[in-house]
Image (cartoon, helix red, strand yellow):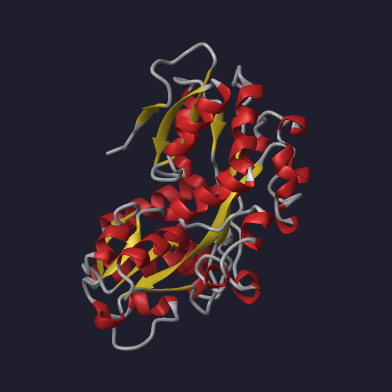
Length: 336
């Protein structure tokens, strides 16, 4: 089932309004109301669960969106397809505060179409009371020791990506033999009864409740889960993983680019960004927010991964040219 939440920041969808399309549970919704109070611009807030779902809905054209929050590889695709407006950074002065390493990314040369929103890693969260050793490898998620006790991610890109990484391959490989090897590993894992379930947003709550020994999870969801259950531990496995950036973009179809840019600028304001990070739990791209964090937060490797962890990770690249192959593999894996 597709979960869609529509939130009106004002009492009605006024003429001076924008439609914001974002992942579920990925903003402090109080900020939407406060943006309206400051600017008079109402916000219609609509949710999606994955980049792929967002892309399909955007291409269907049933709704005109003004701000979207795609990941790096999806931005690469959308730039190639000329789906994104070039931003007027005179309307987004707070973007000057973005960390240097996040400027001029490979997926959007010169950051012409995108402003970083959050970034993070993909890793494993585990319950020390339910495992027989510290978890530090993707291979442990494929071990018979943890039959019916492993939650995998309901996302072909992420699940196949970490399996490729475990096998020593790039997460962006297009080599059919390597992809086939990873697919067979996942089929075998499922057929041996190791996988308890494939989840996305539900994972954090399942781990808080102690319903699995370990799970694939995004770092921000791990932060939330550990705040609710301090016994849980998050790790980026030694083989490496995915480091990702989600950004704010304006589709070319938007008729309200200036208002959309006001919203982007608002979310880049340090005091707003700090509140948002505290609520969401992902890594902020705003340097001032990091500089003003407590020493405890600065030392939190889930919230602020050390450079050696980042260097051992890969960004995802767009795979539109092999997406049909991925879809077929996912059907085989889930149906095994």
